[in-house]
Image 1 (spheres, helix red, strand yellow):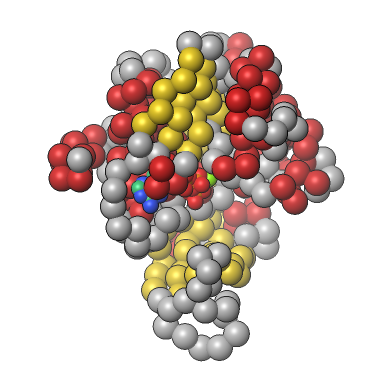
Image 2 (cartoon, helix red, strand yellow):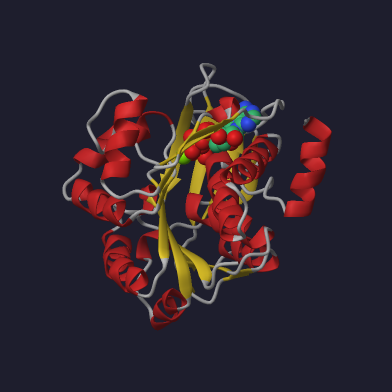
Length: 314
Ligand code: ATP
Ligand code: MG
């Protein structure tokens, strides 16, 4: 196994979901939750479940929503020493309702919550000093303190032989925000493993078409690209060529968190020395397993659970 912790920086939230489809939250309705959530938190929880050393730099409030998340992460083996508990602040939250067309309506409390107050504390620096790998989640980059921490951490990590993965997790509009493109570009330049889905593949190169976007990313120094294709599985691209793996056939209950569990599993499998093909198989299983459970973090799974799941669905 490659040395060092897998570390990520970013939001911890609770997710509260409407149990019916419809147009948002303009009338009283049945809800289910709170579920532990936040893309970086889902990712690092899955790393912990797989038994790999893991830590997250984040912030929660001193409320039940924060406790719920900290208990889950710590219980799954994640080092939460760099999660600041802000007295009197509220933990971030996301209310989600599916529209009949499959789109999602959100009510976010993020910027004004503890999640908007992530900072470079001494505990954060201690955890980053133990990192062998940094996973960057694009959704956290618009928070200036998070972007600053990542900018500082990238060269330090690279200097000691560490590696970087990047899940852009963004929409085109986010790149247009002031200063956002520069930080996304800086992260991409340091990225060893790029984990886009859909149009995220071509957002940075400006190239249209899969082959051209892949060629441009590899030429820019990205070593591995794994393109997530939802129910269709995933494709891996590197200088050695291309490997495709179909998805597992399951009934999708809740797609949230699939990409994060997929990325965490691919990364851990590779760090443990698995081949690209094996890592894709485990990652597809982790993503498929996640979508069969309601709640973004409820489907995280150990290797033993993934082996059992694969035996059932293959
Ligand atoms: P998100 O950002 O919503 O977490 P994503 O867009 O990053 O997700 P997806 O491609 O939706 O990523 O899902 C990641 C992986 O999870 C897929 O590559 C696939 O392996 C698995 N997966 C997702 N949806 C399904 C599904 N309906 N059936 C089987 N596997 C799925
Ligand atoms: Mg994604």
